[in-house]
Length: 104
Image (spheres, helix red, strand yellow):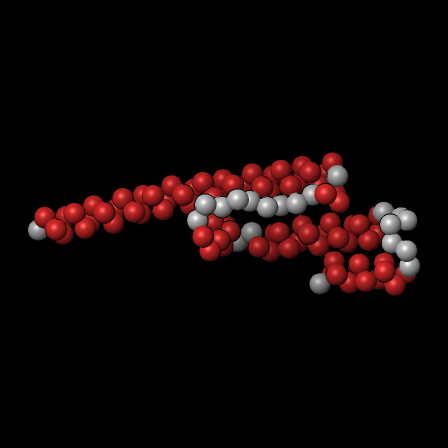
């Protein structure tokens, strides 16, 4: 009986630690998206959306399903760079290549 209670208590402590670490990672992704968006408004070419998660395997990233949001933000940044900034791409072929990468 005591062994069962100790095992249950250990399991609950482990779940509490996991939940606390997951909540930190969720906050890190929230901050990364917010600061990346602010950076994009100020200087689109240098914007990035990266978090420093505590848990392995991207648990919070998958829980929040931000993968498609990140892909969309990066694609918009690349697409805007290929259209908006004149003089950085030397040829029409490079311009088309940059747009194709953004579309993918």
